[in-house]
Each structure stands twice: as C-alpha cells, then as structure tokens.
Length: 218
Image 1 (cartoon, rainbow, N blue to C red):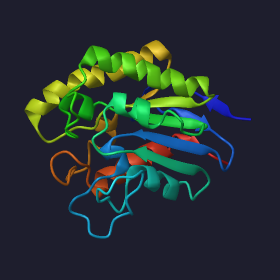
Image 2: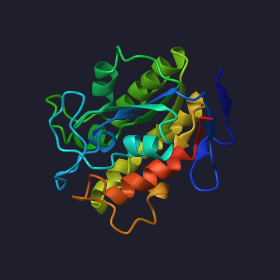
Image 3: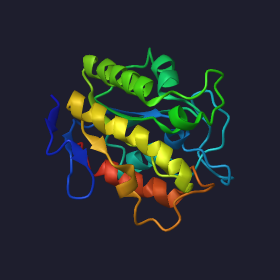
Image 4: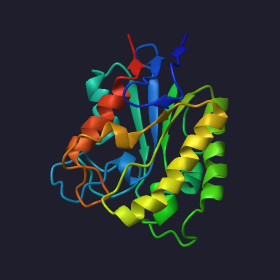
C-alpha cells in the first residue's frame, strides 16, 4: 500500500510535499545531463550510465537522495546528457514502473545543448510532450513530481529558460501534480555550477536534501 500526502501543488521552502512509500519502493528520476550528473571537472565521479560516456559528479542528486534515505528506496537515475523532453519520451518508453517519478526537462528543450538535428523544442510543443510524460507515468500507477529546470549563470539565457519553467508550472497545475522549485532549493548555495550550466556538488546536495525530505520510506 502506498500513501500519498499532498500538502501543496508547489514544493519549495515552506510548501512541503510528503510522499510515503514502503521500504524498497522504486523512485525514478527522468531528465537530461542535470539529472545524469554531468561534471567535466570531476576525476573521481560516479561511473557513466544509461549508455552515455559523459563524466559524472561524485554526487549526482538522485544518487545523493538514495544516500540520504539510507537505501530505504531504490533509486533509478534515468538522466541522459542532451535529452529534450521529446527524447525522454522515446528513450524511457519501455522503462519499468516506479512508485514515484520525478521529471525534470526544459534546459535542452530551450537550448538544444545536445545538438539534436531537429533543434529546440518550442514552449507549446514542450507543454504537449510534458503532459504526455506525466500521463504515461500516472497511467502506470506512479505519483509524478515535476521539477523546474535549474538556474544557469547566464542572465540572458535565464530569460529564455523562464518560459519553460512557466510551462512546467502550468502543466503541474493542469495535471494536479506537485512541482519542485529547483532554484529555491539551491538559492543559498554560493557556488552553484561547475561550468555555468551543470550543477556543482553543493547544488546537487542541496537538491537532494530537498527531494529526500519529501520521501518517507519507513
């Protein structure tokens, strides 16, 4: 039996979502390089996964969630560098079910940093795909939590990315799905990035702390 206790559709400081699952429940994280944990400065990071060869942080936030919860849940990191929402829709089509699925896309939809041949995904198309991603996991019995694309160091880029964060919040409202404000969770981290885009170890830890606080697996 899984008990969901939802206090708010917005999850940040002071608006905490509580998710109770039995020990051993599967919690999946779907996203791009920010979920995967890319860190080009790291020489002793986690091993590559999901078929990518990109170097990883020593503390990608999904794996850090597992550590903070002392292994009481099984964490699946479904991050892949360069993925847009439409890539994730295809890549994880046959993924096994999970009790909770966190979804975080938007950065590559906006910027196509993975250099996909069909380019960026406009906000309207992003919204349609995000709805599909949410409904796919809901139909499999998962509780879905959306996460806004984390901030970057480039202020001009931030203006563009805000359009995609707005879409994430719209979809969350329309789907009745909680949304994690990643910017709020890492707001007090002094050194947020390794390269202006990918998250530092401190930011990954801050994200993980916020997410882990949502999950009760006793």
